[in-house]
Image 1 (spheres, rainbow, N blue to C red):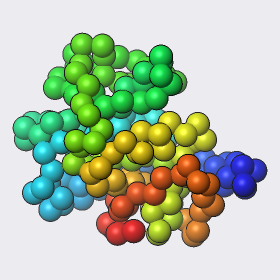
Image 2: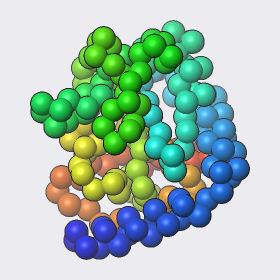
Image 3: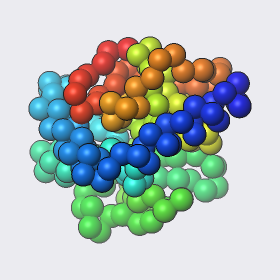
Image 4: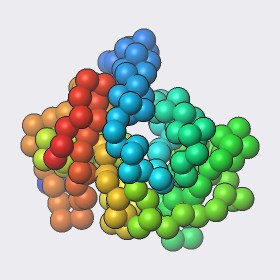
Length: 188
């Protein structure tokens, strides 16, 4: 199973590397537009975004929009003592963020933690997703551990090229409830 996942990860990393910067920018803008205009905000008061790595969809414009709408916005912060991600509230992206694990932006030490089980919407990155809601992450299991503590709606965020046929799963893998791509919402 681990070798199979390793091969699939390499395949999707290759697809993401082949995506041009212009295509990545346009598709990220389409994702933001689709997300902002969704009816999901009618019931959402607290949302966990993620800071994108260079090849991932960039939802930063949607994060800024939602922040200005008065919703509680959190980002993952790595707790080195426990080896897990927690959620911490951000209010000012220019002041609240620091460089964290693997060069990923995260809330600084002054940001207040938010209970994972009180998040309404959790936006989830991944290398690949399938139509059943299975997610293939980067292999460290950080997001699977984070997702075990949430109770809100989990939404995979992906470019269309990241949607796959059946993905292999292990007992610790956590599924998402829906997936958002630049062209569609997929209920899992």
